[in-house]
Length: 230
Image 1 (cartoon, rainbow, N blue to C red):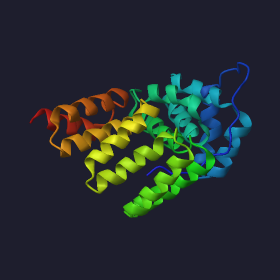
Image 2: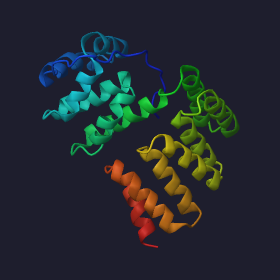
Image 3: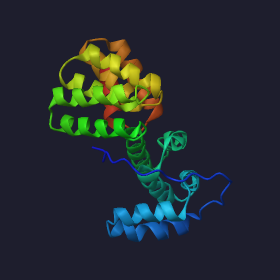
């Protein structure tokens, strides 16, 4: 489960900043990671680099720098990071993929208006307790607060799916995707719902779309293979 923490505003460069040396970034960040000093790492990222500089590391030849850039963006990234992180999902190194995926989920959870993001986190906590009515209550409150916020729809879709309300879940997945077209989680969730409803061709289409965005998902690849075997 992604840590649903709302990060403080992060500075984005107005002018073109010099690129970060990959080795310097790795050397600076690694000791704080080894010490498990998340506040210290967050402070370092905010004080030393702009987020667009960190995004630049996602295309570095140094896989450690790419991996740590993904981790850093999970803490300080915003909507402007999403295209580069989505591209990083196709990185040949599976750990870079995992860090990019984690960063995307983290950013998706904090893209809404502050109160909406807080309500979303409360709903996610209720969902983790499998208190589905309470979770839906918070997700709906989040949606009312910020109807353009994609993630509350996706999380409500999960609550509906776990309550065997597959058609309601599909509708919420579609709402999330309209707001966040590359939301591989919503595409996968919609595929699962179609599979439960016996709608094989629709499930395959959704799984293929999710995998086209996030091709390293082995469990989804297995689900697709199962659907194709029917």
